[in-house]
Image (tube, rainbow, N blue to C red; front, top):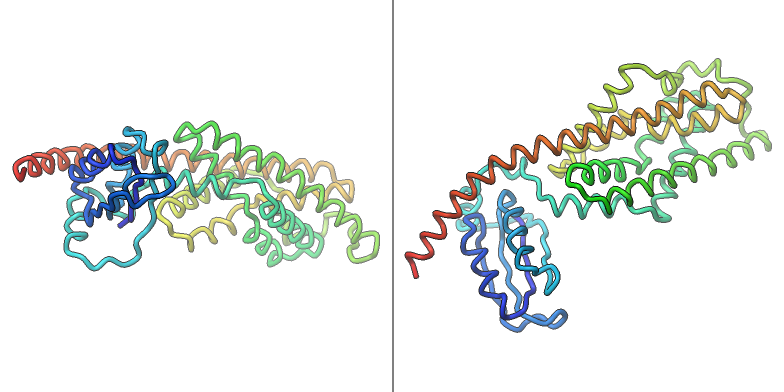
Length: 323
């Protein structure tokens, strides 16, 4: 279940209540007349089945509530209510398979923001990757994969393409196109400094047989990226955060960036180019897979919407008979 809170002008309260009354997946409706101060108006609260959330939000946005008031939505961890169980049963589909699009857009927008925290994590991840390359340590490479925050903007870009959100797409591309060069430049400087003071000593990459898979581009590189991207998007839309760790470890985005930097410092330009190509292939594969997963979810959701529309009509008829 999701908890819905609506702040609306008093003249729209009856319309909001009408939306909730017509929705079989909505229950626990509460009205607080004149309770809102900023923005001023009434407060309407309800618990909504996850499967019905998109339709409720669309109906409220059609009333322009997002501009005249506010719409907030959040998860409810525990609900002990027969009415809630009936509402969930009335909403077709399974909660785990339901994608609340506004929730997904909001979450990915936050994770795709280019800020100091994003740059810090990406730079640390690239530094770890460069150390892993120099020391020929797969464990350190795995650590760099886990620390890297790049899946956020990649997922946001997939959502933007699937939902046609140009603003979100620009935000994501901005984070990726500025974040990676910044992190790689910082890693290059740090690597040169560590070589200068004797902390790192590497003349060639011929002996790095434990981590050389990072720059070896092949068909399986794209396969792994697509599978990881699909798993990552499924984990994101179903809130299965534990699965995201496996996604991070599967894809060599940050390690490829770190390998490219180390290759540049030793003059291995071919390997640097292959590492950059690996980075690009992985990012494209993740985004394409994410778009495909969302497209399939959207198609499945359209079928559920038809069932929900029929249930909503029955609910409207019941409400009218009661009146």
